[in-house]
Image 1: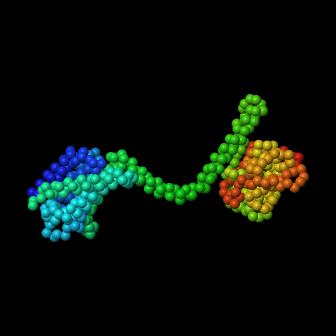
Image 2 (image 1 turned 90 degrees about the vertical axis):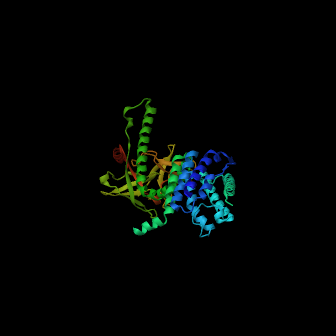
Amino acid sequence: MGILVYILGLLLSVVLQVLLFNHLSLFGGVAFIYVVALLKCPVEIRHVVQIIMGFLVGFVIDIFCNTPGMHSLTAVSVMALRDIILHLYNNDPEFKSGTVNKDQIGTSTYARFSLSIITLHSILLYIIESFTLFNFPVLLTKIFISVALTFGLCMAFEYATSKK
Amino acid sequence: MENLIRFITKNSPWFTWLFLAIVSIVLLCQTNPYHRSIWFSSANFITANVYDFQNNVTGYFGLRQTNDEILERTGQLIAENQALRKQLQQYQDLGHYSQDSAEYQYHYVIAHVVGNTINQAENYITLDKGSVDGIHQDLGVADQNGVIGIVANVSEHYSLVLSVLNPKLRLSVMLKGTESFGSLVWDGKDSRYANLEDLPRNVDYNNGDTIVTTGYTSSFPKDIPVGRVVDTFDEGGSFLTLQIELFPNFNRLNSVHVIYFDGQAERDELQQTVEPNDN
């Protein structure tokens, strides 16, 4: 049941991303709501399945954005590393199932975890987009703005859906 | 095999990631022209450097053949040059085009130097072609830079060439573009220089002028390069001696032309009826 809800949520995030958030760009930086959805993936799903899901989500976004390969590469890398980063920050052995949210692992842990994943994603994405580092200030600006917007969105969503 | 399967299943997330990442990259590079161009140009940068290095190494392996090919081509060009000059000369002399002027006069055989000395009092060069290849005594020998010597002796498969660096050889040479001629003799001192003797005093010349064969000896056709003027020795008298820097590098002789041309034998015989064969 939880997984089904999650998958619906994932689809919704993809739709919102391509219809709404892709057009709200500030100095070239975009808020990535699909990343937020991805990092909340339930931990009981097998890692391999998580990775494949990430690839599919990225692939769908690519189809809409006409950037074949770009988002799928970053999404799949994010999903591959998410597990490790989660265990890096969260040593709670009781957290075995359910989606990742601040109620389960604590606000500060969640904040650190989500910030890491979001930063990683943005860096990867914009480097792939430019494929070179030739215009470094522009690259940094985009990364910074994207991270800020996405992280803001993430925490806002978190507080909005918190059960407390 | 079991261990391999176990390894793969244990690390299956990473293999999945790797596979999907490769798929994404392929998609990226194949369909996006910008990424494709960057990929290809950076790939080209790497591959170009690797191929460059390989070429630098293997380029040396074909040098002997390349040298032979160059010499072949040079020979053809000299032959054409000779024929064209003769044609031009006839045209200028007679005022009309002459039918039989298009024959090549200049023939050559490519030979390789198998023996050479430069520091003895009398130096000889050994070539790997002999009488079976059509070489006989008194043929001129030159390489792509200039005159090397004259064939002194021939066996079936080898020839001995009297090098320019041999005082026994007196070559009839002239200043290019003029009709003033003299004799080129080696003085035994430096393998890079020889002397042009018996040049009349009234001749106008400068350092750097080219010295070429006159064509008066039957060994060489006209205008084969020999060297360039670098200095003058004035010992009084009515003749000057010039120091000539020789064009060929006698240290590094490799492949040469042995030259013969039409009418050579005939000229030889005719000259011998009135004077001893003195080159």
